[in-house]
Length: 401
Ligand SMILES: [Zn+2]
Image 1 (tube, rainbow, N blue to C red):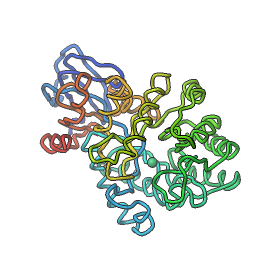
Image 2: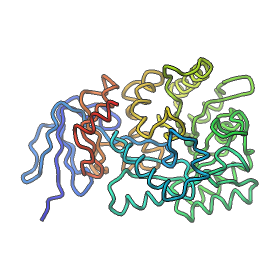
Image 3: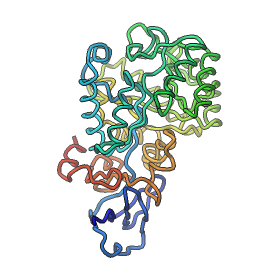
């Protein structure tokens, strides 16, 4: 009989919240962590040991905002209107594998077409190796509103309630609503609301009644304020655009901190070659994220992977390095993509920590990301539900790319 137990040993541990700078051995059984030893004890008799040397063990990363269906190097609207389901599914599997090799063991898809991410979730749940998927299905949006081409148009209380109910019937893990316009959809205005407070309340009341959390895409300050007042669980982007530029509203920030609202920070990292007008707008977005973090808002570093060439599906560790420079300490940043991100996805009891009872989703990196955050990209190994998913050489070359 095959022993399903495995011990993984490293030089130090980040457990999802706290750094433990001493040798650690994680004992895994049937895909779950059963023990985390910091005393230097040998593995129990008969248990295979993977001693990985001068590495840090940490929880697998959680990307709380992705779009697996989008090829970042193409036009998303064109892809979604013209590619058939088989083509999109093939692409989604490639993107999920790319993320997994970078150490992202859980992905929350916040916008697909035709509930295809639920199909992928089922594939991985029934044996195919892949990351854990959570899925919102097509985001709810106004008529010809932001990402209308994903098929989620609904306006007015009656249609909105029906849209939420239909997502629950499909088995989504949450509801995503586009509270404001977006930057990537022609003809929509990110600085303007797509719904009023009463509409948003109808959505949160219905969703929460069905046991589904709600996260709202919101750039416009007014849309953010309304979504928070309506009791959404999370705000994506949260850039505070107004007619006269980017202007954060401290009262809304206080309300988010008090309510425990999560913010999904997807701001792009500045890169060489970006036009100056883009760089100018990115700067205040980052300042706002730092302000929210300082004022007690639960800011989750996530990506919006897929939406443009700066956002490939394995971009999270790279964006995290910049997030740590702008918004949070290294430990806070690492927690933001592990324990906090898991909590924001409703998986705080199973993911994002290296602790007994948690899923054995591990990222093993060379060096010590608590002191050198960049080390989070030096992937040595990835374990998903206790199974190694990446070879050493392959993983480290991808991780450094
Ligand atoms: Zn998005």
